[in-house]
Amino acid sequence: MEEIDVQKLGEDIVQVLKTIYDPEIPVDIYELGLIYDVFVNETYDVKILMTLTSPNCPVAESLPMEVEEKVKAIDNVKGVEIELTFEPAWTKDLMSEEAQLELGML
Image (cartoon, rainbow, N blue to C red):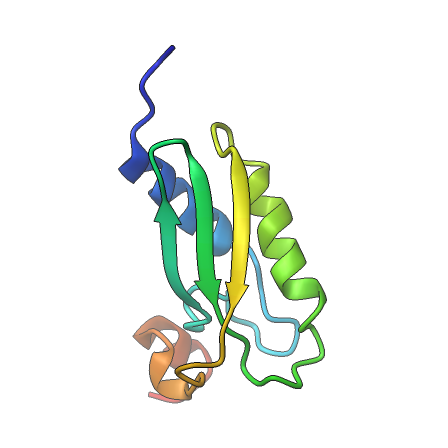
């Protein structure tokens, strides 16, 4: 069996996360700062710690499911667990400079 580079797999996951957009803000969820962490273990199971812009976010049901489905579709990913957290609460400070520039906040 071919050895898979866990770091490369992590980079592939980030690239997929950058294709998922918050429907209300024209910025992907990674640059928006909604992804707190991505863990890949030696058996290629993935755990993603993420948040939403607010607990009452209109996509609270669908966005984590979209993340799970798109990450599961990556070659070599065995399983995906999404953990939704509101600690720490999301703030605009979590956005990348690129996202802030896109939204005219810089």
